[in-house]
Image (tube, rainbow, N blue to C red):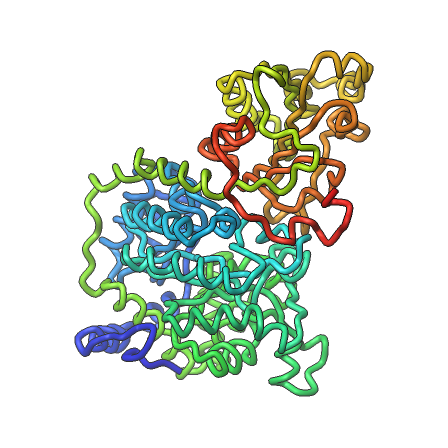
Length: 574
């Protein structure tokens, strides 16, 4: 099931010798540990030492920590592990996916909205440079899902496009830039997210396309990237019933499993039909798409037995390794399957030159968040922000004629009052005032409650005043929407901070109103009454600045929308 001389490895004799000798001299514990990628949350030396010397992890990802902490952690890993680690980032939109100080350049749909693949290339180049500076050698990207279902918000703000050809073009530009930085890519989420509404963090995803439909969309994307030499593929906890039934005639509905547990999707489809010879890694193993399908014990053994080479994240290291060892000793994971997985893991490490590891110097951290990188973020914003419609012909706004603006800002409910309100609201307010507008805004329900919790706040949020006063006071309204969600709900929709809120756009028939989405692209479904609608794709400062420049006519709209913005309805186009 592997050939290290062929695509995507292309190893020479010296590299292959390192792979074979490393595997030959591994203990059983080292071999089994190589199958795991740890989610590192703690950075005490004792804990990090245990990860590499007792659990023998094959790779690492992390959450939290500042720039120097992450750098020191990764340097510790490589300096103290007998076998070098695959150290992964999540650079889906730029260097911010590697470390919090990193630079967001462009989310996937902003890349797709740009007229060329240059935005995707720039985004990846910055992500690669910033990830490399902290010692990363692998990224769980590009997101090569095809956004076929407008209701899907799992990848709505991550996927490049609903057009497979555009997904291919942006993905290839992304991969090229990462490879130029010496970083391997893991295309995700095979067999494909974006065809349904639900989130594999919460349920087993289902890609319900027919085999013919899949071949023309997701299959076309994966085949192209595999032919082009993609290093690795991340498999989602997403089933593909049509192909399971094709390769396993008579399979029962209850036997259909997510791809991570499906030999027919991993071996018959991905390795066989599509010819993939690289490393296969699972998506995060704590997702309900996997844990809702089988027990943890069966999941740990099952994903490797089915054909995955690495499992993303321990639940508990000692329990997971114990279960893996039992599966190996009982024959659930055969010697051949373990050997196959190890060759894929070590083969990727050799391709990346980890057999002659040279960790980056600390002075290289200066590239992260550099002025040059933020200039590329501004360039991406300028190229991508999209005017979806302006049927009332209100744009551009002239601060001399439409001087007094009402800003209505819709944010996601804070996780806790301690989080405070969305700071992007302050940035947008400052940018509008800088452009010459007089701006009035009010606290939303969450802000009122954070200031002083009271039943009166409900009534304050419902008090609209008179329409006449509103018309006399304001020349235009900008309703900015910055909704987001992750692993909490299957679908994120535009929502107001309370029921019957004065935020609800009753004012569109009183004063010209512009709606700006700072994240998802499908909000017109919930506000079809908006006659002017803009997709800005991001709440990063460069994007907020650029959207105000475009609203006020200082810069033209250059982004291109796709038909998914209309949400399959006629009234959204009015």
